[in-house]
Length: 438
Image (cartoon, rainbow, N blue to C red; front, side, top):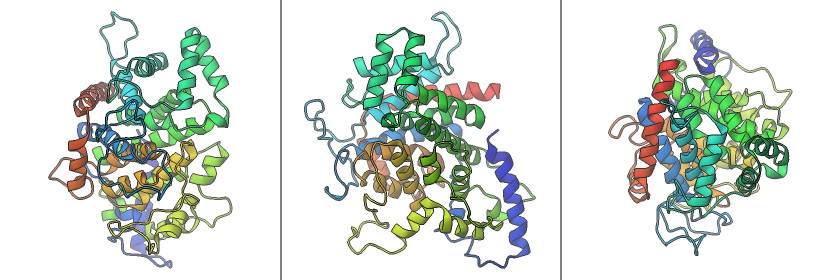
């Protein structure tokens, strides 16, 4: 069971008691929707979460395709689907085309849902690195699971890994990938951008999901930084899925204090035992900070004071930028403050920033893609996690936080929705089998 279910729920119980008992530290209103602790995941079924998380990845990937490779503030604000003109010899001028981020996500989902140990095996589904690489290879060489029937965009490290895989026998290829591509120069975001299906399929067993996330990264991105980025992102998705699919309030808890919130996402990531120093510096508290307060309001204030990412949000969002587009309710930070390159450290920090600095799926998506540079990947990574948090059935509690007029327009413009939904249904079927064994 995900650690949120045990450690964090026990922690919430203590915090609730402390809040009732009172505290000497100043408290902000618990109902203030601007606070992280007052933003809760939308309850929904596993099927709804999986389907909408996969569709959301494709939507924001496609939304971010046109500003990809462009410097921040060098293009008009992107809020609608536009034709992707970055690949003029490979793409028709059509809006809603998703890129390699979604294709590789679909490849991984298909492998998880359809893997067979032998061609005649009656059983389908499971985790297998070789099967995953075969899906990536067919996408690269034949255009399988592409939005346009061909691979028009591929990361350098993925391309190198597939080249090694094609030139050597399987076992030697896997060993060579892990040895030859482990340096920091290969720390791209190609494994993080596709890892979503692991959290969606295995969220009921967080520890197993994190193991699979590590192994998934090693097929193309074996560096410690890439592996740990995939692991922590998958763990966060597991926690969100557990809290939104199985919200189980206890009579020992007190109101909103008992609920899983964005503050718990911050705490999960901040408490992750990173061994990569750069990820630890970006995503956890520095050494020497004062002891953590117990009350939730005080604890959130403490994180905003000391956590590097929350301090960045305060520094860049507390005062409206006088030059900001009047259509926006948030600032777009400078490149110096928040890089959005293909370096996995930049991508995970930027995606998490977009999730924590905004309060709706739409706002976070617009912020992500308007960062430019590797905009489609930052958007896709953001969207998978954010949809797990916000998404729900139309007409229900997800209205406004997930479903908006603009999000519906994005979905209507998206190409090959049928393909994404078909793969999503297969992943739903595999998750049900995993549930039966859990």
